[in-house]
Image: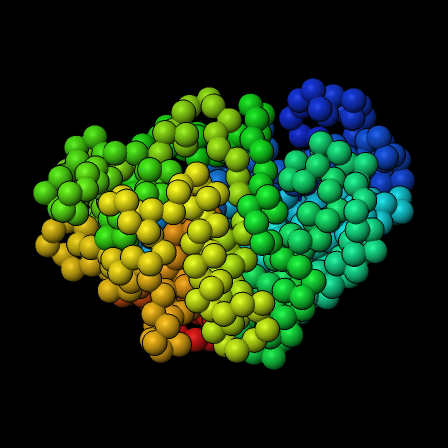
Length: 531
């Protein structure tokens, strides 16, 4: 019989939940085959939620660093152009959608994250944990939206059906369910305003604070509402305005952040030890041109800096490299020395590393700025919200709001610079809001600053780049994908060998009836309608 990991056999589910042991899970590590939802009590349940909250962001203690590299670093990191690869044999930076890597990322989600979330959500419903069930509904939407935004149609509504065939849902249906699910969760969270869940510290994001989960649910709803702006404007506006009305993040105290520890580390702290990627030229062009102090939170000075192209009167030892370098170029050029690694907190091997930011207030402001640009009820003007988004991210990272020359950042007329003193800048978009500009010019400003503030959440930045066409970034130097030229980017990830082998009929039906095109990186997702 085929090993259908999406069948979710109960015993395998519990084994996946318990996996490798830490002190937190020792008391549960008895005979996992005897565990059922009915047997989980309120004293045991929080430990399952804890695991469910960690796994979608590749933060468990058991072999998550590999899937993090496969699913996050080798695709979203380089398609958002936050980073470029320096390893000669890493061809995803030249648009090769390496099947084995994608297979590892896909299997990790459906073997680890999805079962954990399903068990936590279903158990809460079975046990009558109403608030906790609402929290897990929100978390399910968060986790699955990142997966559908990679692949498009995916197994969703029938995941865990205990059948050999697990059908796919269209992305449109998935997003409609996201909005329904978030609406249900918000209603429960509103009804329990001011309460604290018994999850306590096992809620590694908010410590059980219901009001915080309510703001997170609304902010996530706002993100998804703007994601579908070009596919279904009415659906987008309705959900965006409802989310804003119900209350989204407005301060960094609202941020959804997963704290790290020695067992649940930031995976960047492991993969930076391997020396296989460096900062992109796009990051240098934009942040150097803006004289942006946040560069010190993102990158370390290059081992071999080039001061010749630094801004006048400003030392800028942070260097980037172009995406799409050939294997020969990477084998013969010391890019690891010439370009910047991540900032020190991300490069301390064995250290828990920085907290993982799930969503932050800055993003909420930029989402509202875009909504205001369309004339929707966003609680402020596009310019006001844009400026607030910039300030929120500066404050989040500990900066005073000035650029590297000591001038006010928000009102600065500075634009991106050449990354090497010869190549033109990525764009001419200024920091200071261009209130007299066209809607597209203002949108470019909003998304460019959003791109900076999202770092290093490349999965979100990559999705926004596909959705809006912004920020404008450098073309690839080379492409190994005959379908994707250097001036384009992959619009989706291709389905995996595991699915074609084990869920054959379902994936074939998805390609034929739900995807809207062949199973290639050029086929656009349902919401990808603008460009």
